[in-house]
Amino acid sequence: MTNIYPQIVSVFYSLLIIFSFCLKKKIRSIENKLFGLMIAGNFIGLLLDIIAFILVKNACTLLITHFICKLILIYLLLWIFTMTVYIYVISYKMSYSDRQNEKKKWKKYSNFKKVIISLEIIGCLICLISPINVITTNNNAYTTGIANTMIYILSAILILFWIVIMLINNKNIKEKKFYPIYAYIILGLFTSILQFNYPGMIIITPVETFITILMYFTIENPDIKMIEQLNIARETAEKANHAKSDFLSSMSHEIRTPLNAIVGLSEDIASHEALPDEIAEEANDIVSASHTLLEIVGNILDINKIESNKMEITEVPYNFREEITELAKINGTRIGEKPIDYQVHLAQDIPYELIGDKIHVKQIVNNLLSNAIKYTDQGSVSFTVKCINQKDICLLIITCQDTGKGIKAEDITKLFNKFERLGIEKTSTAEGTGLGLAITKKLVELMGGTINVQSQYGKGSIFVVQLPQKISQMVELHPKQQEEVEFLKVDDPYQNKRVLIVDDNPLNIKVAKVSLKDFSFQLDECSNGKECIDKIKGGAHYDLILMDIMMPEMSGESTLTELKKIPGFDTPVIALTADAVSGAKERYLQVGFKDYVSKPFTKAIIKEKIDAIFLEKNE
Ligand code: ADP
Image (cartoon, rainbow, N blue to C red):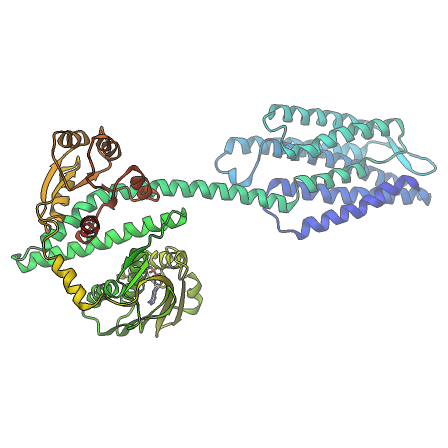
């Protein structure tokens, strides 16, 4: 009886592996399939061993015992062949997904499989036809004969073949997936020798169970495979993401440069007073279209920055009421002819000056307001800001309610996903990229706030943003003091100030000049870094330099580094660049630029930056 113990114990382990393998979620791979065949086959092999034992013990007819013994030989044959295919697959890294790309490799594999299947059929026929001797001992039975000898010889040849395949693929030979194979080769040889000398010891099937257990816990565990696959998928996605970022950064640069000319020059044309009506209208259309395009490019860059964790929250003091009132006014003009009752209400207790990321707070409000107006055809759009002031913090509660098309309940969860445009047919005229709300949510979260939405499809939506901002100044300066301040400012702070524009592209110089037209600056220009350095070295003095970054021969950065070496040079330099990708700003400030303006810029943006520099100087 002792001889059958290994089989009985192995049956339990084999069942455990089969259950656990079948119940686990698996990825679709050839190794999985082959491993499944191996564990199922091994289980049958163990059962056959046990049946043979029982038959011999009960002295059953020789015919049945013969048949079962032949089945055991067939099992041994099929198992070792399956293992051979398995080793081929892991050595040559066969995967279903490569089927299209690596046709040659797959053709080889399919030929190999054909050879193996033919050999299997021949082997099985030999086992079935050839006579075998069943020798019964006290405890067990074993066989001798042509089939047995054939299996010994075939096993030796196949093991040699495995070693050859693995040596050919010697690059991967140290990989963990080959360990169970090494174990099988060593244990297989050891058991063959044992069995050859003591034919009554039938332990090859339990040894195979042991190998499947080893394989399960090292390489064939579906969980491990799934993790491996996920890692590969993650790496691929990361690579794709990098490629996307690179593409975006170059695209942004290429698009922003010409867009700079369109925005700057169309704004200038539209601001002329004596234009014929038709041209004025067209100029305004170009301004509006170029702003939309600017917004789209900006949104793509923003989402890119957010995704690479490079979006920075910059805190500055700002007058919330003033900024938001202006923004609400601009949005109001977008209503056009639509019968919409537009109401804006800002609570009285909102502090006069807050500290926060003004630009991004405005971006959040702008996204909510422009959506409400865009997706509402009639009824009302109401925008309210209330606040809760606690010590130094003001919690802004921004509510934007509309009676527009609303959002279906099942779409609410998708609302903040990027590129998600809900229920909007491709032919729809509502402009947008589906990025606004994705950016809004991320910005709100970066500032420590929350955003919530309630909507009824066909009836309207309410968006509520809660945003904490620091309080800088609770109330406005005393009106008298303000008058004094205004009095102090009566002098034009820009008069007689000399500004130098450095850019290799004449069109860009033209645009920069046009955008500075409203200031009473004395403008000068030059087309490269060297010329700029020469001017300064020659004694020219400027109050501000606007410097392009990407210039042939000498970049804006190296020009500035050279300028800084000139004794007494302290002119503020603003970088003008189309390179608006993540991290650019920090880089420029580090080099020593006073500020950074990304092209294309509107008159308003350039004015804001210049104001900041001159007003700071005046203080
Ligand atoms: P965009 O407006 O560019 O399409 P957003 O990210 O701002 O992208 O909005 C995503 C989608 O959410 C919109 O396409 C629209 O279907 C829906 N949506 C946003 N705001 C509203 C709103 N106030 N009313 C109805 N639907 C809205």
